[in-house]
Image (cartoon, rainbow, N blue to C red; front, side):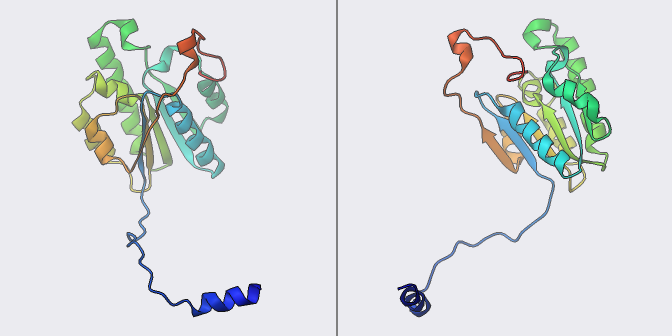
Length: 197
């Protein structure tokens, strides 16, 4: 029976139509995780974990969560030189209510991003919550896009946060929009240690 199928397959010379594939290119990807759903930072941290497994040096800048003691920042302390983690935010803008201060804070964090991005030792850099900074006009989108284009060719960059601007989405190689289906917060359940931070 199997031999009969093999003979039939060999006789089948019908023309097939195949989609043209682009020539393979190796380059550092610009990845954007955006959307209303939970999981943007978690997806980025999954990539961090994978990159560390391959022996890469990784840099992370968090633009908003600076006041929080997150599990990821606590874990990163033990990986200095492999995982360089900078919590540079002062909390959400609705907490500070000081636009000038928020802009200054975003500028300092973007300076750290540029420093890491231009350092060829980093194979992956993650700019967590950068989309919020762009949405609230703490940094100009054009300046950020120009900076991203200066990174070394093999450096991957992940940007997270809701409401990623259209220009960033167009420039990115990979964009995932996290869709909210259900969230415990809708039932009054607060953020959970080890799950949410």
